[in-house]
Length: 358
Image (tube, rainbow, N blue to C red; front, side):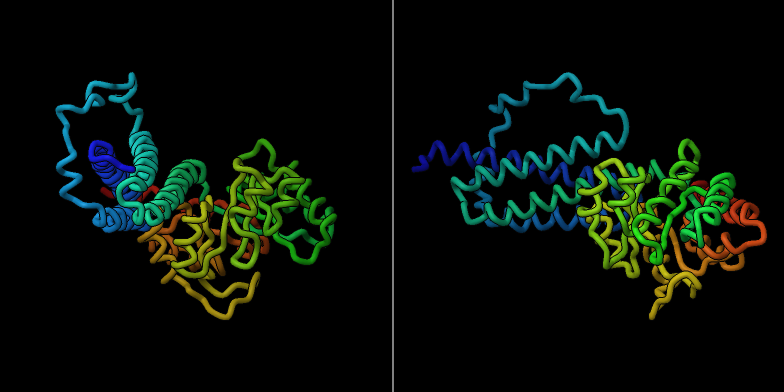
């Protein structure tokens, strides 16, 4: 049975952790908004903050205020050695993220003693905070990892290993930033054999090797990551096969899919198709409108894909997307190395111009 003294202690804990969680959420929201320039994540944190306020409105507010006693709080005299130092803005955001998660748990547990009906809703908000924390860390780390990766080239396995190897070596020597092996025709053994060759060629180079659709083969051949579509394995399933230290990319064809990929923890997204392509057929083309929406909302690395060539790439870059995925305009070019050089130069120039904006 809860006594008045015990209830007062519970409300005091709830009051302190309510303030702690709301303050923490605002700190992380501002990092997403001003440091990452990520409208999607900033909006998600803002919505979580408002939902928390709405749920906590069910707690008697007068009881919270009456229980507050800052002068008598022994915790104000306790400090940790590193409490007043932070290495950078990201460390500020992560510290607040962790503090928020801890505060959510305190609120959830102590609410059970005085307002038990609120605890289930608080539990769901805590899980939401975990999801956003993962998306925040993944977005930040992926931006660091892929910041200078502008050109992504998709290739098939060719008619034979003898046909495949020279092209893979040529693209790597030309410093394609990523090469994706995508081939629906080959059997598993043939696909793995092509993957091993591509791994040997790209190992130690500037080029990352991504396997399409098959995290199992990506793991077997030691690829740098895997790319999955909307109908393939989920990000979580791909990571279960590959482990936490490989890249997982996701194809997206709408802004809703792009937003979900961020929350699912994808390291990057492919956005398209932008223009008609000879590589893959689609019934609809979200086109430049999708790229515009992604550029405005999402800071996770996003590669525009679908029919991009030297002739139309500037339309993509003018929107604010500086990362592109191509196939035929490089692999079928008279001089693939020259095509790669021209495309990379255009992307890098656009990136410099955008970074120079205030």
